[in-house]
Length: 161
Image (cartoon, rainbow, N blue to C red; front, side):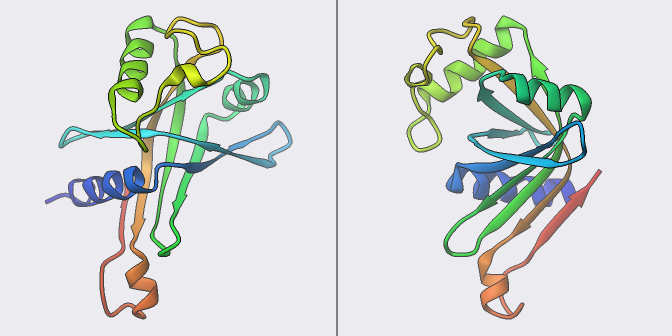
């Protein structure tokens, strides 16, 4: 079994339990900027892809235009952490925007939600609604039990591609 095939399912499970992630971009002076986003992840047995419904704010657009690499980090109070270092790309096609909209609106909370609660997000083709695709090049899963047991229990997983 490949490292990705071992790491990706554990990452998706943990990320979807935690739900909210800190996502860092980099500004024109090389300084990080973090915001809280709500990605969902798909693992098809070969490829891990993240999807974020988000607003195309001028800051986010400028950061990703200059440097498309982002850091996505999850943390839970039981010390479970997982992260994905990714290339982020805007997805402008209506088919993808509709699919991401439908995923969030049809999935039970807390992973799913009604996108219309966000001001300006009236439909998948609304100017205020956009989609980011996240293609990881590194994924890490670190169950809190590894930390709290002094490494005697659990297993940290890392994949780099």
